[in-house]
Length: 464
Ligand SMILES: Nc1ncnc2c1ncn2[C@@H]1O[C@H](COP(=O)(O)OP(=O)(O)OP(=O)(O)O)[C@@H](O)[C@H]1O
Ligand SMILES: [Mg+2]
Image 1 (cartoon, helix red, strand yellow):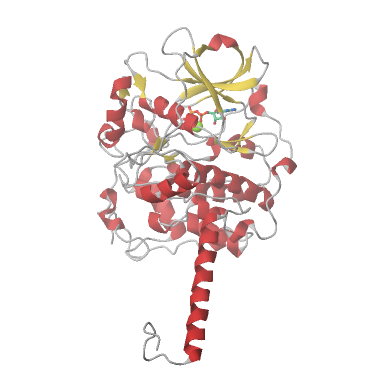
Image 2 (cartoon, protein in one colour):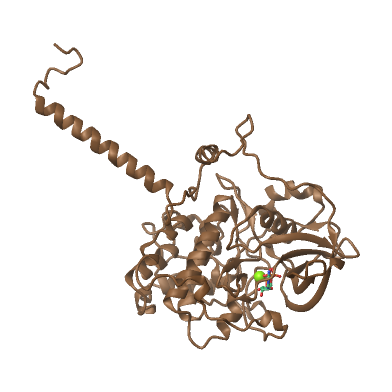
């Protein structure tokens, strides 16, 4: 008698049944693994939120070098001196932002047209702004067809003249949309959104959060290719996340957890911004145009309803959520379906997943790329078939489009740049980002329309 065979199973059929079950289990496991490892076109994809062990496994599988302690080796460029800006001919001014002045220029040796962003370095302060360091560091680390390509860093006559040389991209979506009579077609929205998600998935896979995704930071070339730009607020994140300043992301695109003062947040803040951009692409109008932080959160509630412990567990413990007053006779929320009657249920479903209150329930960039919205008709338009638009940046004469500014600290720097640093302070500052920006939301110039903003930032949320 077979010793391994349990006594209660002496029928031949039992064996066959067990074997069948084992095979089914095996099949399911295989299908699951395949699903995880393949992208929309069958290409291998990395997980959106890899834990250290997982990312190690992926890197090892991809043949990437790990140190003996298990740390991942990052590519580091060779140290060499920067070339001079004199190698470029200045053609025209494109735009001055909170953080830099952008010009169109020509490489005099190759004739190539480029964009040069002159970083603002405060002459009165010593040291190099941390946001500039981060912009250079993160852009150098990213290589993706939908992320603006950094060519080199060049310097002018003095140390405060530092320029980022990038590929020149003819349009930015904000200006393009301001000149369009009709919103983009559904097929065009899909292409733009898919490219934006693809760039974002790449950033997140490389441990970078952008923290200022908005239409004016999305460039589009004449071949319909989207290029994410402006990494002035971008930074590396860790798992588990370290405390960071919540005063990031331009107000209209800012996630509710940031508005409520969360210091522990992650890639999900970019996903919320993508939801707002999706809504804007569909209607050619910003989705949630608040005038102040409190007004912004109220507008979010009007659109999506009020969160509660089931839709967003733990939200009441966020610093600004403790005492917000929500009226008893709550206005019913506008449903996303009613606001976007012309898109399919799949489109509404994707939008609502991008705009989930609870960051944990928000879809990831990688998951969104696989959403049925991109597979149903009308299919995404091939980028090369986009209509040709007249480039205002090449002409040098574009009109000003009213558009919200990225959060700025009181002395005119972007939020996380409220302290200017010497290079040696850099690592310390990374850890102290939270300290640097105290008090949260307290800068008088932190939001939009600050001059007229009676309510001001730093509000409290009281639930009625
Ligand atoms: N590579 C580029 N090619 C063409 N135009 C560009 C390029 N990079 C930036 N621009 C233009 O310059 C504008 C400002 O650039 P960017 O957003 O990087 O600067 P900023 O000072 O951080 O702006 P803000 O603080 O207003 O967001 C962009 O909105 C875009 O119109
Ligand atoms: Mg910008």
